[in-house]
Image (cartoon, rainbow, N blue to C red; front, side, top):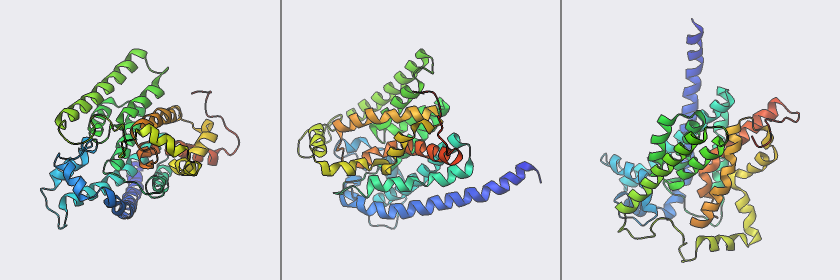
Length: 338
């Protein structure tokens, strides 16, 4: 038996076990998550968006309801077949997110088994964004797919696989507008490393795609009820930034907000010099423009809005953890500001 055959014999069972475990954990996690989602974002709202009659800005997040609408031609034995397809897609994208995160970690760690095991750390962080914030706030059909697209976008950006990145960026923007922060990460991680002309061209191309999608959706749904463009006001008519200032003005709210990333942002900040990959280290700076954007157009206390950034911070934590295990003594991963 050749070395290649022996390697395949060893890898295939591990791959099968990984995929089975990812599926089982995803199903269990979604069994907990989806009933909570039903309380606010139930079949009626999903049906309205799928039939292109929903309120803006939720109507703009058409990708998953659109896919569910196509799949609904195959009727399921459920009271709400369309919404049932939405739940199935939630499970699928949860599994895909674990797979994409494992791919990202394997690319960074070059260790297949470590990447497999650490990819499940997603399920440690996610409850802090979905279950723990109180009072309870909605989780939407675009949150988990958004995290998947963001994770895969990080992979393609790191590898500069533009032929794969641009179609992903286009499709993902129909799911959620936060794809613009992938462009910010590209700028942060490439400034001073890529040729200025090439960097400017890529950022301009991504901005053009993002704006084209936004304008297209705006024109298609111009007569739908709700706010055009972005959601600058909350349900009471108060500007989001004013409502968010009131939230932070109450000291009792601060611990809940600091729980984002399952508090793992704390060791990431403390041990950032142990992050051995410059791309991962630089990408962390996206938090500040992301926070500023969400402060203006979202309820900052809905921690689900930060799920896109979970792979950014969790990958950094995993690199720190592995480095601490391998090199317990103080270690400096790279030059300052790298």
